[in-house]
Amino acid sequence: MSHADATVANDPVPAPDPAQPARHPSDRLPRETVTLLTVLLVGAFVVILNETAMNVALASIMHDLQIDERAAQWLTTGFMLTMAVVIPTTGWLLQRFSTRAAFTLALAVFSIGTLACALAFTFPLLLAGRIIQATGTAIMMPLLMTTVMDVVPAHMRGRVMGTISLVIAVAPAIGPTVSGVVLQFLTWRFVFVVVLPIALGILALGLRFVRNVESGRPVGLDMLSVPLAAFGFGGLVYGLSLIGDGTVPTWRLTAVLGVGLLSLLAFGWRQVRLQRTDAALLDLRTFTQPAFALAVGMLAIMMVALFGSIIALPLVLQQALHLDPLGVGLLMLPGGVLMGVLGPLVGRLYDLAGPRWLLLPGGAAVLGAFALFAQVTPDTPWPWLMAANLLLSLGFAFMMTPLMTTALGSLPHQLRSYGSAVVGTVQQVAGAAGTALFVTVMTTVAATAIGTPEEALTAGARAAFTVVGAIWLVPLVAAGFLKKPADTDLDQPLH
Image 1 (cartoon, rainbow, N blue to C red):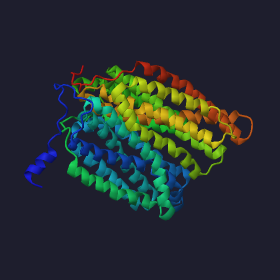
Image 2: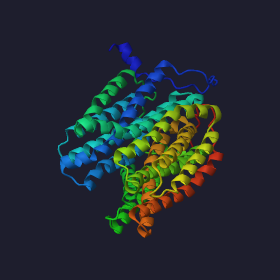
Image 3: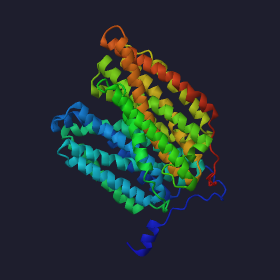
Image 4: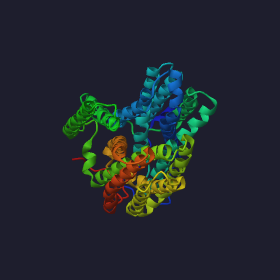
């Protein structure tokens, strides 16, 4: 590469100038911006698809490595915990490293983890590979969202964030399907072997096309905040994942949750002190922006409902309606595809009308879906549940893009990387809370219900969907108060 080429490759992509008047909504993004976002989107698609592709392969891994179900579950639990620990640090990381360096780090780490998984001949090595994969994954999504907010004009952010919603929704939905096809002909290792050259190809494209939106600046790393974040967010997510597991002693559950909560409080207190000198690991001044705080609160409840539904519906379909795993996957696949397909459309509608007129019908659709799920019995026909799941997906599709775009769009430039980290962390913690809530209500009610095991399980499911439906009234009401941020790039001083 010539000196001129090297200079072009490392020069920052100019962010929109706040002093310039807003352009007409029909303006197109520059070609270099489209290329940059395409590479980031494809990278995000691969790392997210990998997260759910593992689930179908667990039975084969258990047989091959001679491990039990509880050990195998750590391949997903360990991934989730790593995400919860690493994502809070990405606010600092995206301030410290350039866009190009952060992308290279994310894909390189993910590729190393994928190679380690493909070559693993023992369970500890496979688990280590999954943890390395999760580290790369945790960097990619905040990088993508922060970059979008920096290079896309305010009046076009909805449609671009809608495309991100497509990736977030479709990749997890088709991950098990891709894995199932691979396992029909090859061993579980090829789930990783197939992903590895794709990840390396995207890394190569990134080295060629990803430009520096942010050049990075020397930001100190507070060494006390890192373990506090790890014990706080990691302990909370792990503790929530133990709720409903009858084999876990009460004292252990209480201790894990206690350590997590205390560490989280200490972490928050330290960030408030450090942010006075712009030295926080995760700057909590994001919550001083009312639109951000409201949107993130609504997003948290949405993640509770989404992840809780993801865990509850397959249990009902398999254990009460006796569908096989393939039938369950096929029944739930249309919902994920619907969310993805609607993402870009919802994004365009957001740019035109703002969040309120999307959130209200979306919230009503989710509430209607919960009302349908709350009537489930062992005799409920599966098309009824498919229709309810499609309605649920429709509602979430109308809410995800407006909430993320409003949250991040309401932040000044200096806080966007931290805002992306907060959004990602909230998704992980709220997802774990939703799973714990559904499992706890279902198992508690089922244990006291009268009738067959199928009747007891569906009684627990009805109770769980009713409880979450009641909680859902909070974001449904809050939707009426959320407004679209001004179509300008905020660059205000922090206080």
